Every structure is written in C-alpha cells, then in structure tokens.
Image (cartoon, rainbow, N blue to C red; front, side, top):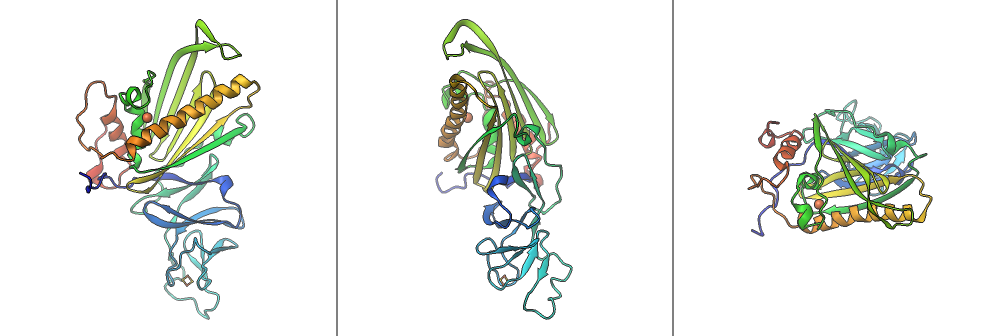
Length: 333
Ligand code: FES
Ligand SMILES: [Fe+2]
C-alpha cells in the first residue's frame, strides 16, 4: 500500500485564509504556496491585500521573492515590470510601447481577496470561477473590545482538507484517539455552504478556587459552524467563555495549513486563566493526537461504517458540493 496515492480527492473551491491581517503591513510582499500553486501576497500603499499567481509573465521570475510594492502594483525583481492586484500590467518602465499582449488584458491570474475576521482570505476555484458565496462575517472576530485576548496556533498536516472537518462527526474516534468520554452530539443544520452544530450539556461544576463542587453541575454549550471547506468557527461556553476561528487552507491535495485563532474576554482571576488555558491546551492536544492518524491515513471513498460511527456520509455529501469536478459530487440526502 505504501506507494499508493493516499487521497483521490481534488482541492475544493471556497474562501481560504492566506494570512492573518496583522502579519501583512503596507508594502509587505510574501511568497505563498497554496492550492498547489506559487502565489504572491502583497499589501498595496492604500492598504489593500492582493493575491496573484507568483510567476511573472515576462521571463518567469517569482514576484514573491524580491518583488516590491509600487503604489497599487507589485514590481517584479527581475526587470521591474509592474502588475496590479487584478493581474494587469501597469508599467514596463524601459519600454517605449507597452507590448500589445498586455494592453488592457489580464496577464497574471488573480484571486478575489477579502479582509475580515482578522484574516486575509482569497477565493480559490480550480476553473477560476468568481466567488459562489460571500465570505461570512463573524462579529466576535472583529470585536477587539470584549474579545480582547487572542492566541494563535498553527500546524501543517499531511492530509486532505476534507479529513480535518470529518473529525467532528467521527463519533467513535473520541474514545480511542482522545480517550474522551465527551462525544459531541448535537443538532446539525445545513444551509448551503454553511453547516451549524449546536450542543448543550451539563458538566461538573467548580468553585472559584478550582475545587470540584460535589453533586453540582453547570450548563455548557458549544456552537460549531463551518462556512464552506476552509473556515470554521466555534463558541464554547462553560467553565470558560472562548471562541475559536479555524482556518484550513490546502497547500495541495495532501497537505493543509491549519490555524486556530482563540479569542477570549479579559480574565480577572487565576482560576479563570487556568480554565481558559486548560481549554485551549486541550483543543490543541486533540489536534496533535489526530495528526498522528491524519498524517498517515489512506482515504476510503466507500468506507465500511457501523451504527456507532456518526454522520460521516452526511458530512461527505455536504462537503462534496465544494468540488468543481462532477465525479466527486454526491447528491445531498
Ligand atoms: S521576469 Fe518579471 S519583469 Fe522580467
Ligand atoms: Fe479528533
């Protein structure tokens, strides 16, 4: 089995985070490798983030290595040609006449880019379709007042993007991989590119010093949303109040960049800090446990499932709407 391709799934279309907003200042230029392509990300002088294919159509230099921002364009490091965020050539500094091939014509592929929720997102579609839906706006990710603390963790994982979210519906693995009795089971609502799960439960209560209160329980609730294939959002309310944005961006068909951005309000007591840190560490510990499996598994397109497995097929049908290739699409039930 070891020489076989581990996944026979293409890269889906959708909005994908390519950077956190704070990581790109005006004038910054960064090379990126996502969607199996060489890309360049830059922030123009007016402050807009732009994403283009990185290879210059003149003689092939990589714009992300040595390119520089000039006004609203990026200049190539090789011969100084300039391209705007729509992929049009705006200047060939040493030419008397602009080559007809670039006059009023897009000459580099560009990616629709939006900045929201503290991140820079671009729309990827294998056939270069325009966005099929608007990027979802999460008010909490834009509210730096109440949600004043932020922590980010990130991982590169050797798996297909479909697998990272399948984890949430794979009920049985919680007991075996995470040795956790808490199996998240809740109402799932599907609405086009959105998938929303609401869970409510009761857990052990603690006092303000972290002592277990025997026989006392507290209400816990958990909302989890997926907005297309590359964007998840969770709100956990219980021993701590914490939101988490998950961004999953494919590097290629067998590798993803996973980021978790945690946000939480001001914590005034040591015990609140302890519970909050415990929650974040537990979420990250679970990802790292999953990675042991993800990094080596082979995708089963027609798995043998049992009645205790959770709604894996329902999830895969929902996810299949993000494949441009008909052969991978499944009818929603
Ligand atoms: S290769 Fe980019 S300007 Fe020549
Ligand atoms: Fe897991």
